[in-house]
Length: 221
Image: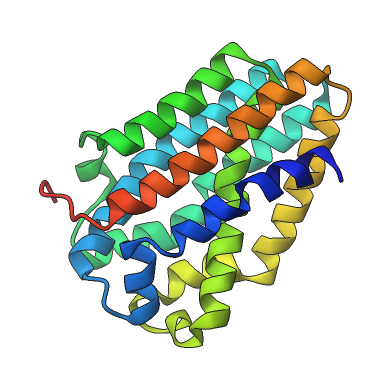
């Protein structure tokens, strides 16, 4: 079993538990309130701003042009591909990016980005990537399973969000990102691999906490 596959297998139970959170269960059952979805979109917007900084650290830590190109491509993906649906949801809720950027991150969100940024600041390119990878891969896992079990969730209010991360195109990107992570981590010492695995697991646990948080509407939007 490859190093990345072992990290994924270790976190799969956490990702499966995410599907049992009130937010994702409500999405599956069609009972999730618009207030919770609005709060999630705001929280996700603030998260993605900090997430993008991890890729910037990755560029600084990069040892090869291939690494620089990959981190730059990921930064572009966050700023362009992931932004389209997010901005559409903000417009639906009468919000703009400019309005929400001054808002505070909720504690669960802050704890998550602090973990990622600490790993990125204090580590190297492998640590940067292992901090980001659980978000990428868990979203593919979660929304693919959600759509398989509840095809109707791919239409209506939640459709754009679900389709973004359950599409074959996104799943293929996840395969490519996992392969790149394996290249980054392949020649690391066992001690450093163990640290990277700890980062991956910690960020998976933060993903679960984020979904739990999202079931509570924000009170400031």
